[in-house]
Image (cartoon, rainbow, N blue to C red; front, side, top):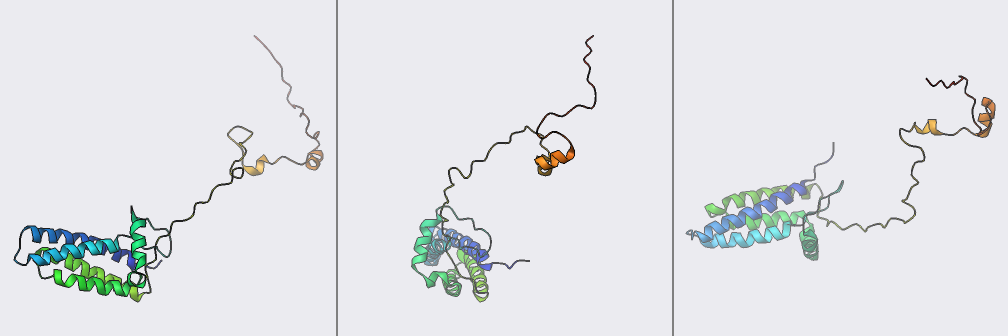
Length: 194
């Protein structure tokens, strides 16, 4: 059984928690809650988390589906180098970002989700995972004459490849028939028209 890549789970969890933080922050700010400034903080923190987590990292095995428009954000995240590549840094950053939003009821769900994402990132860091960008593969241009194959000469249904092999002249001579010539029909054919 394969190893679980925890960073993929943490990425999805952190992206969802960023959206939840934004939503809770909008509710708290628009509703003019008593401590509405924590709501404004949650909007800013949620946007930052979403921008940081939008580009998916490349998996060690298998293929990774790239998010729509990810290549633009990937170049921005790559600029920060080890600060964004290291999952220990992300775990601490998410935990610190989640604390102030925990003082307001409208944003406490986003806080809990971001703290869980922080724990998953910590687990991924302990297991030695790190963020690597998904690089576009260079397209290989097909050779013009190399991909065109000759169409089959005999119509379907075709016998298996072993039965299709034409016997060599030596095998045909050993069989007793003329090489490449017509064969004699052992059953006489009569044409009776009524």
